[in-house]
Image (cartoon, rainbow, N blue to C red):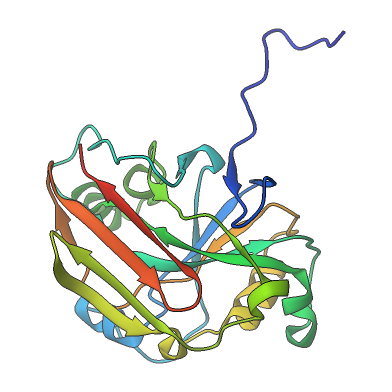
Length: 229
């Protein structure tokens, strides 16, 4: 018998491809402007500056097979297709050459963004959570274990909206590679099993409206599809 004053919420999770197992989610970290072309389209210098991160809530995850409910308090929701890195272990100050040993697997995610609210926050010098960490803001595919596919360093990443390509790039275009992201992030936080890292998006981000169908994927990793409701 527990002493909780009410029943705890279920643990957010994602399915593991080809398995009945599920991956429990601890935290979601997102790296900003990790593709040079996206940095440029957002009006920033694409040079290799230290990475920066923001967070989404674990229960922001929208599991595969679900549609995306258009969120409240916004008129400008944008899509951002990303490689998702799922950790099976963590630590602090992880050396770059040991970082991949912490990776359970990979998936495909969408960093959905209330761009108008994010822009207002930026202008006022305030945190981004209002634009990034709302309900269902992190649609994600199932996870593919690294033991099956290794650690992809290249592969096409793309997103279509209503059949038209909006975003396309390659994982080899990331400014900060996966081991570097893990190592740097672990100098700021103690990483844990269950953490997800959304690794940045290529150029072509743009708005969605109710009724839009989004289809995206990464070669060798997976795909996702949803309708904006």
